[in-house]
Image 1 (cartoon, helix red, strand yellow):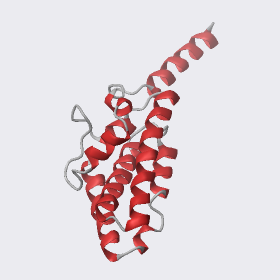
Image 2 (cartoon, one colour; image 1 turned 90 degrees about the horizontal axis):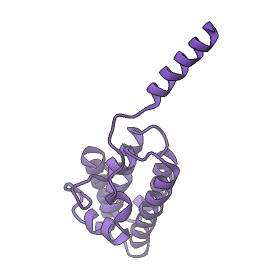
Image 3 (spheres, rainbow, N blue to C red; image 1 turned 90 degrees about the vertical axis):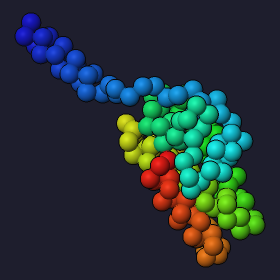
Image 4 (cartoon, rainbow, N blue to C red; image 1 turned 30 degrees about the vertical axis):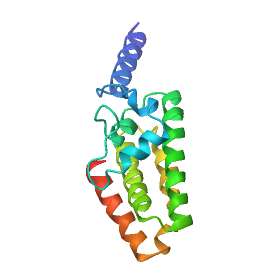
Length: 153
């Protein structure tokens, strides 16, 4: 009987330790399409907000399920790839700033999550690999976007 009581107490404590007091992920994180993310990112290096005033980092911080992560990951990664392509193909400085912001905001949100978003943050970060070498203007834009995304993302 003591063993069962100790086991029940241990499970209750473990379950309580795993709960997250943050509200669930806002629906705008997954209902906003790629064009919506790109529109929001045009505000970088200022405050980038999704519809409803939601910072991108909040989406990553509040992911709770694999399904949410897949939906969010699809749109965020596609957005990052599109921005990186614009930088690679034409040296688009604005796209570099937006990609830097997105990457840092995703990283900031994943860093404050339960770990479920870490792989998405890594994948988004990788999209910017080698872009700094395109030009000094691109390197500055990426850095400015990253600083703003880490600060306000």
